[in-house]
Image (tube, rainbow over all chains, first blue to last red; front, side):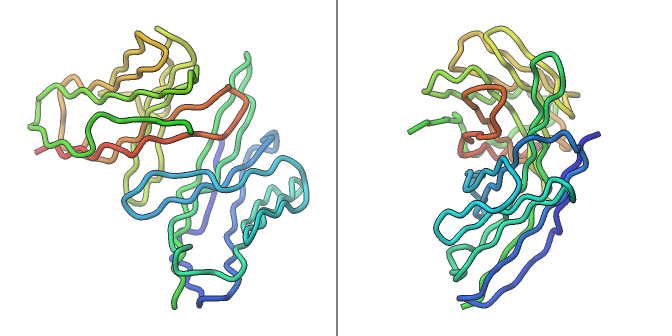
Length: 114
Length: 113
């Protein structure tokens, strides 16, 4: 059973601080990783993807991947109240016969305090 | 922009009723999915489809069926709704099998009384 684990939170950070969201995955064969943001009452939307070890930056967001430790993180710099949402981590794995499986964590709720 | 449209945002049904949830995507995606999302349980995959008339069970298919007669449309059917099927239902689609980039619809919140 492939699993993606996240701390459910809530994670509270003051406005302007760095928010650090973490995720671990069980399948060492997972190939690519994704962060989705979900505002309350809305559907998830993709904000970052990462495919290789190291950091990937996009504006205030940085995704980090360490395949040896099976660890993915998302850093949000200069956090804003508008970043308050639940962040879902997902891992894509090959499951054989040309099929792929996308496994989601349960999400971490982030609250940015003005 | 990719658009995934779910026919009903809010539904209230009675126990035992048959429920249809419709989903349409406009970007010619081959892959479509139905999830349900409950507090504390996260997203759980009900059924998915990689082609017209093709369906595969996800993690929690019991009590559900699906239909994909046209590429753009993927329907979720609750043959006899029960109170434990009260949930948020999310439809999603993606370009190819080997991507994790899902495009979600706005969701259908179903309440079964």
